[in-house]
Image (tube, rainbow, N blue to C red; front, side, top):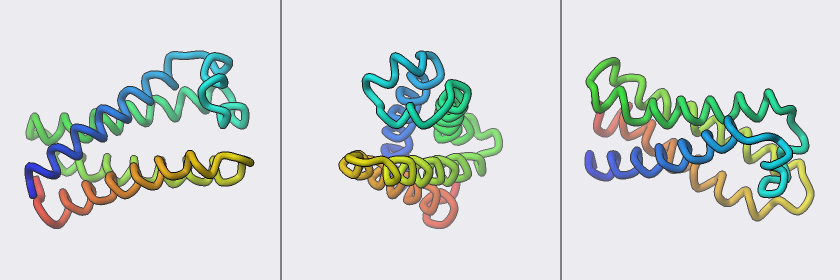
Length: 124
């Protein structure tokens, strides 16, 4: 179970790090060509979402790897699962974006599983 959790943590960290860096560093106009939902948010809100995703990605790995405050790892996973709830709701209120919600649901479930796994099944 520990290996499974580490693999999921690594995959989630990679996904959220890449997505977060893109949102934190690129302009709203550039992101709009790939992500229609950015039209509903300001540049500052998009950057904040990106920074939260980067911090969550780092929180999935660094506390567990360093042994410094390892309880932050499941908290980061729980926080990322809440981020996916927000993403799901953002896509839900937009027309023709129901297909994009599937990715949100998958990432939500994986992050929630890591949070549960690190809180209950195999704590660090």
